[in-house]
Amino acid sequence: MNDAVPEGFTPLKRGGPYFSQLGPLYSRRDEFDMVVLGLRVTEAHTNMIGITHGGMLVTYADGALGINLSVARGVPRSFVTVHLSNDFIDSGRPGDWLEAHVRIRKMGKRLSFADCELKVGDKTLLRSNGVFASINPPGEPVPNDG
Image 1 (cartoon, rainbow, N blue to C red):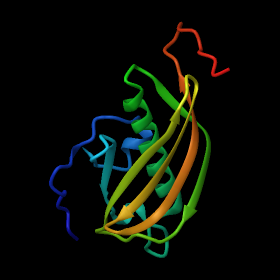
Image 2: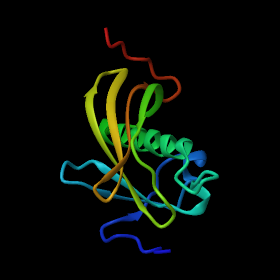
Image 3: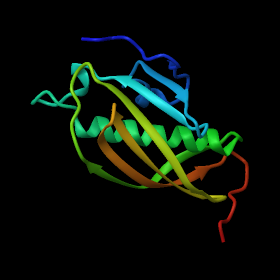
């Protein structure tokens, strides 16, 4: 299996304890200054028939969406998922380099909308879109999207 990390990717230093268990995870910036996540698929990411587990793909997309929203906000905020819709299009296998590409559609004071494609080369494995709520640091008032 190829363990090489493609040029331009560096170790990811974001995400919580649950998300980091998918790794090692890597990131780079794309032409739109979005954070592209990278992951080498291993057998630990597969189901009993040897293809990428759907739950792993959803977790990876959800984490990529949250990281990009947090970075785009530019101030210390975390995001929680309010709604997430996923389309499983294809499957990955051990050795694949799996990238998460995110596009933010709208950022409000409280709610944000974004989508993600998980890709192996030109092949899309998963399309995900969601709604996310901004969580303020303790003691700070909650903004109203009104």
